[in-house]
Length: 468
Ligand SMILES: Nc1ncnc2c1ncn2[C@@H]1O[C@H](COP(=O)(O)OP(=O)(O)OP(=O)(O)O)[C@@H](O)[C@H]1O
Ligand SMILES: [Mg+2]
Image (cartoon, rainbow, N blue to C red; front, side, top):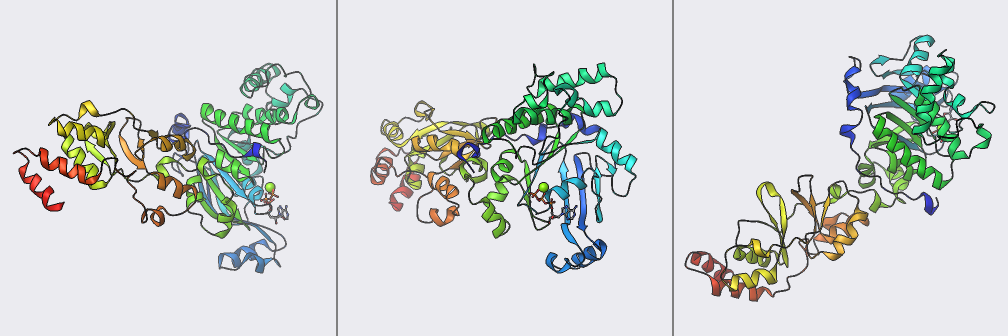
């Protein structure tokens, strides 16, 4: 894949907020936050599909049932949550299209059941299925399937026209969607006058105009040039955020999957071999097939700070004095410590040279030497955002939550280990995970602590002395 198509992270995946307002209206048989439930679905094409399923269910290999048919999907179970982008990824022929077609009833499973927003769609009449496709699930195809002699707006409104909705209303609805997908001004053009990317926008508009909660997209962007494809991916994420749609997106492009997916199902030979977040799939591939799939991914743009952080070790309470700071740095052999206030709120950093001066002067308050130069990131930020802060900071990069609380730290070795896909313990057993070596020699710290010990902490000084 070309450079232009390399993976770039999208900002924070906020699954919690997506589509929340829509949750109330869903059916009873599945919980409110499940948009689609697939329960042990199989699809076998061929002469004796049921016999093939029976054997597969009893543990037969896919290759051993070819006499009965082609097992396109084997025993797939999963929930698509309301408001998520659920990506199905796999090589050509792995069963992706067959799977997605069972989710809107275009194909009937040979065995198993599919529930869409509370409605069981397996074994129901064609009329019910049409209704599901009209009101609940829209689909966008790879080849835009536009009608060449109709204008953009009539293509977008086509589904409404089929439903017999009057021209004025369908044009009004189509117009709104056309603006959403960035095609304002092109309403009266014919598809042939549009670029590929614009044609795909019309395809997307046609799916959006029905205003269904669920969008199924089968390789919808695969025919586009890399740059336009990236633009469409970004726009899809934006649309999803604004409209709260649930999206099932098929691709064989890993970087696209990683960019779009809240969760990714990896298919191989008809089976879902792994289902997890992009982080899960990268850091813990279920088997060699998945590992090979992900080996070319730019880990820095997929892994998050929260995914690789460690407990922060060099931390001190703001109420601790300069002596405690110096002692902590000596014990951890580091040149700086994080200082936290109430509720572990990160206040800043104390450096060993500053602490040493304060201790020599016999001062008790740490705050004057707390510097605001901690390198901080949030848990959702990608490793690529850590390079600069990590290079500039004497301490591990601090990971903070929305309230500014210190929730973890990322030492440079951990960052390197994550990028190189090495377990950090393999490296950190060799190196200090705390940070750079102290700039003040340990002996100087110990000696200063001893000389400045007051009567109040004589006992402590004795312990210092005995340790030295
Ligand atoms: N209508 C059909 N009749 C017979 N076999 C089929 C049919 N549709 C799909 N298959 C077979 O089922 C398997 C899965 O096909 P499917 O189209 O679902 O794969 P895919 O993952 O979508 O592949 P691609 O990336 O090429 O689109 C393939 O072996 C295919 O040949
Ligand atoms: Mg396909």
